[in-house]
Image: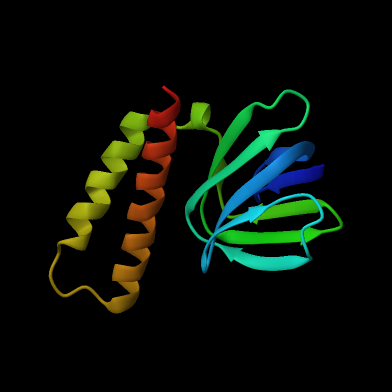
Length: 136
């Protein structure tokens, strides 16, 4: 069994939830974490955390943006810039944001840092839309 905690600067998504497994969107690709996983610290990319609750086998998903994942002694700490459960996501708002980021990306003469920032915002909107639509 693993104990999973997911926190952001604004809220706690879950604290010490007992899970059977966890898949995280990491820098080098998805990482599956099972009981007795070796100690690990990795950077998270925008994507979907997937887990299975220990007590009832229920599958769960959380959309995350950039952050960190720390694994130690069957404990997992997720420290994310943002994290949202599917039911917290406003699909029309995310679709409007996605359109806005795409329009801004098509503007001429953008600086490299502006492009990187806009692409990250676009990716976050795409992930949020996908996770919200998958559960509706």
